[in-house]
Image (cartoon, rainbow, N blue to C red; front, side):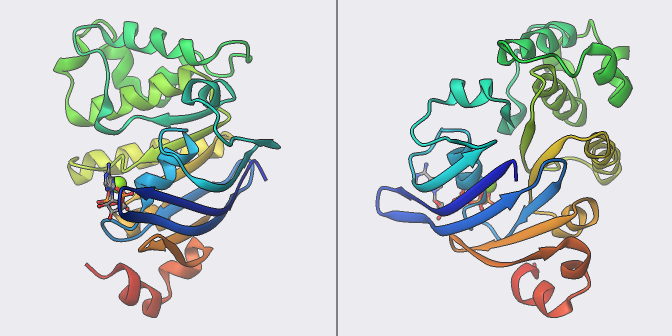
Length: 233
Ligand SMILES: Nc1ncnc2c1ncn2[C@@H]1O[C@H](COP(=O)(O)OP(=O)(O)OP(=O)(O)O)[C@@H](O)[C@H]1O
Ligand SMILES: [Mg+2]
């Protein structure tokens, strides 16, 4: 197990967003975290990244993350691709990628520019273009590429498909799958349950701050009762 979460709870003033979540991710797995709006998916990722205060236990690679600052967590190689694809829009694609190296600090480089360009060829074509002028899909690829420059041991993704056209999403998820096949461990939060179940090996369904169901993605995808009960739009 590279990640083990036990009895995780998180509150915002007055609102309990997580009510005792247990979740595990094995090294090399792609695990999907799905569930309706407000279920607590982003809160869970933000607890892992050290951005939201919580109770319970998070152990990453044998190390408890309790009260660890976000920059120390990312130095351990647990990297969240920022939501909203935050990047330096006035800087070039290349410069944004190079800045991703800052998360590395001490660990070995396992991804370099050529790996990222192989995964996302469009980033190489546009390496000198200002990041702010990229399309939404290209910006998402850049955000993932920049995280990879920090040579993560595990990637956290929060709704990478948000706002993207279906054909773009298809390409993006194809890249995520090949990234996972090359050994990257991924925890993927997605509103698009079908897509997330198609690309992951296991999945957790979060509902009102609790794990309502978990199991192999293929089995969940073919379980009409679960789909209807938890994931119907
Ligand atoms: N900064 C905040 N302050 C107060 N309440 C918050 C805050 N962020 C989230 N919440 C509440 O916590 C609960 C969980 O929200 P969260 O954003 O984690 O859900 P989510 O599953 O990511 O939803 P979505 O699919 O809409 O992204 C919701 O009830 C939400 O309203
Ligand atoms: Mg969210």
